[in-house]
Structures are given as structure tokens and as C-alpha cells.
Image (cartoon, rainbow, N blue to C red; front, side, top):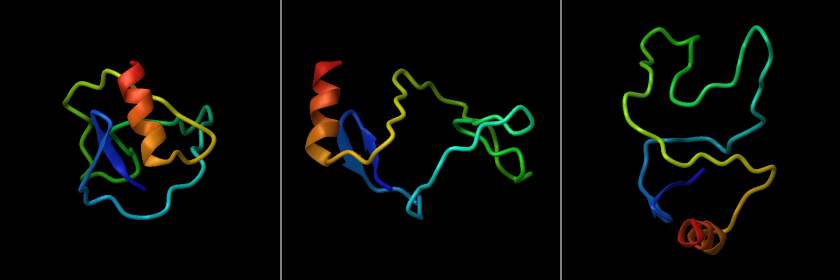
Length: 69
């Protein structure tokens, strides 16, 4: 996975290859927290644009989406 800030890839401690987002009544999808890990804290920042796609995007596509707003 690659984390982008303002359309530019940045280093992150994130690992793995991603996977499906599970969303059920008993386990809703979350952004910024994971309730099964007690040490995980909720996101305390601000997110102004969240998008979920059903495919991976190339870096050029992410940049284009950022400049389009």
C-alpha cells in the first residue's frame, strides 16, 4: 500500500498489500481505528477527502485526482 498526502506518495510504517474492507452490523468498517486492538487510538486529526476504489490506482491517477479536487 502507498500513502499519499496532497497527491504525493509519502513514507509510512504501513505494511501489507491491502485487502477487502469488511463491513457488517457487528463489525463496521472504520477509518482511523481498529476496535480489536486495545492500544489503537482513534484518529485525532482531520480528513477532508476519503475515497474508496474497487481497484488499485497508479501514482499518476492519484496525482490527477488530487489536482481535479
